[in-house]
Each structure stands twice: as C-alpha cells, then as structure tokens.
Image (tube, rainbow, N blue to C red; front, side):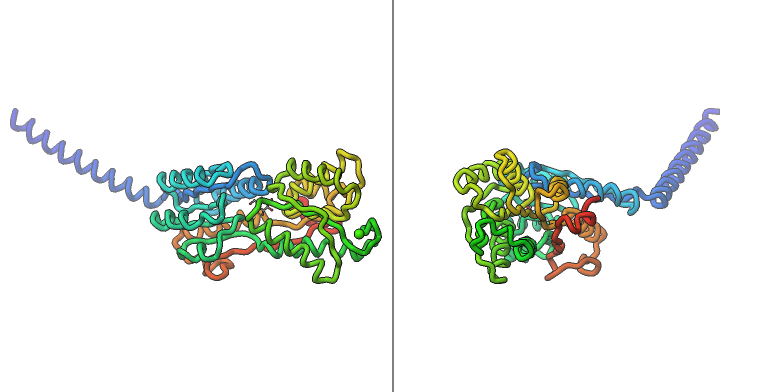
Length: 348
Ligand code: GAL
Ligand code: CA
C-alpha cells in the first residue's frame, strides 16, 4: 500500500515535470511567434529647451516617433533632456543616458567646440552619435565612423536671406529711405561662435555686395537668438539712429520679431526686416506684412532625417545605403526662401 502510493507519487511527479516542460516549450514558441515590437531607446540632448526653433525640432521628433510606432512596428523610446545652455550639465545628462542604456544619441551640443570628449564617450559605449543643428568641426565629425551631423548649410541660409533683400531692394526704390543709393542696415546676430551666426551674417551681406549693392552697416550686436534681447538692442539703436535704418537683418526669426516689437512699441515706420527659420509666429508676421521674409530652416526635415538614421542603425544597416549621407557623415536639409508670395506653401 505504502509502496503503491510511493510509485504513484513518483509517476505523478514525472508527469508534472513533463507537463511543465511542455508548457515552457509552448510559451517559448508562442513568444517567438508573437515577438514584442523592437524597442529603440534614443537619448535626445537639447542645448536648451527655451529656443523656439529647437523646441519645434523636439516636438516633431516626438510626433514622428509616435507615427513610426503606429506604422513601422518599432517602439521608439525618446528621453529628452534640457542642457540649459550649460556644457557641464549636458555632459552629465549624456553620461546618464549612456549609463541607463540607449541605442542612439541625438545631440544638440551646447558648446560645439566640446564635441571630441562626447564622441569618445559614445565610441567607448558603442552608441551611435547624431549631432544636429549645432555643428561640430569636421575634424571631430570624422573622429569615429558612427558620428553624424544633421542640419542645414549655414552659408546657404545667409545667401538666401541676402537674395530676398537684394530682390526687394532692386524692385522698390522707396526702400532707400534717404535716397543715397546705399543700403543702410543693422545686423542682429545669434550666439557668438555659432556657425549660423557667423556664416549667415557673412553671406547675407556678401550676396548684396557681390551683386554690386553698396551697403553701410550702422550697427550690429548679438541678441543670442532671443526676441527680448533683440527688442532691447533695437530700441537702443532707434534712439541712436532714428529712422536711418533701411534693412534689419536678423540671424533668426525670434530676433526679427524682437526688432519688429521695438518698432511697434515706438510707433516708428518699419524698415525691411528679414529672419531665418520660418517658425509659426514668423509666418504669421509675414502674413501680417510686418516681416518681409524669412528662410525655411527645415525643423521637420531635421527630425525626420535623425529618426531615419536611428532606424537604419537600429536595424543594423549601413545608413549610407538608404539615406542621402554625404561624406559618410552628413545629412543636409535645404533651406527655402519665404515671403508673402509663396507663404501658403509653408502654412499647414
Ligand atoms: C539656428 C536657428 C536659431 C536657433 C539656433 C540654436 O539654426 O536659426 O533660431 O535655434 O539654431 O542652435
Ligand atoms: Ca540709403
């Protein structure tokens, strides 16, 4: 009796073990059949969130990532961090993102001369690194084969802005307010040392002088991409220069809007004002006839290209096979001029 119970027990145990094994095997097979969607963890480091254009790139990246999940079967887990314009803060944030494990990093670097240390960190951790908007020097970009840059060519932005002014100047003699045949201008510059501040300033003016227009710079100063600072600067210039300014060049739209704020506050007649970016408030100002024109800095294109890079790298592909990579490292988004004439193409 005792013995029977024992053998019965061991038979039961063998059977239970076999059943458990079968269940595990079935579970494993089931897992393979209905695999969880692939998850790509992407760290996104912004130089600051307090920047209209950068905020629009981040927003677009979020939107495209959600869209990709619906259609592409890949889950994209974005961790966005705000560097608050401090390189030390940003480096800590990136250490943290790498430490938590991520498949790719998108970096809008605070100080574009500090890229080398970041590239070495990413290489050590073997995390592909995509810089955007704030362009490290080529020597740094070529430091490691999985370092990329996504952005727009700074000199092209300046050239197109210059061309907008050139065409207006040639078409409308009234722009030469004092009738001396010389174009008197002021220049609101972005952050010192930023490629877009340096090259937009240079190429906007060069486009006019190359075309034979005589120009006179009445004043120029940095307003760090900011509307408030640009308004303060312009108010000061209005006191010093009165209505002598014929064209206000601004390296970006927020500063162009700041200049317009200053003219409106003092109720002085607006000169020709031009910006760069084509942000929503700038397009609105073009529609209202306050901002003469701007140059599209393609925030959606930048976000799309970064996501495409992340997806290609995540799938273990060589991005050069499917994406317009130049020199193996760069994706360039073209600028486009915007005025009241073609505004509808840009307002969504
Ligand atoms: C420029 C843009 C500016 C500002 C800056 C930040 O390309 O025109 O508005 O966002 O980047 O790096
Ligand atoms: Ca003049």
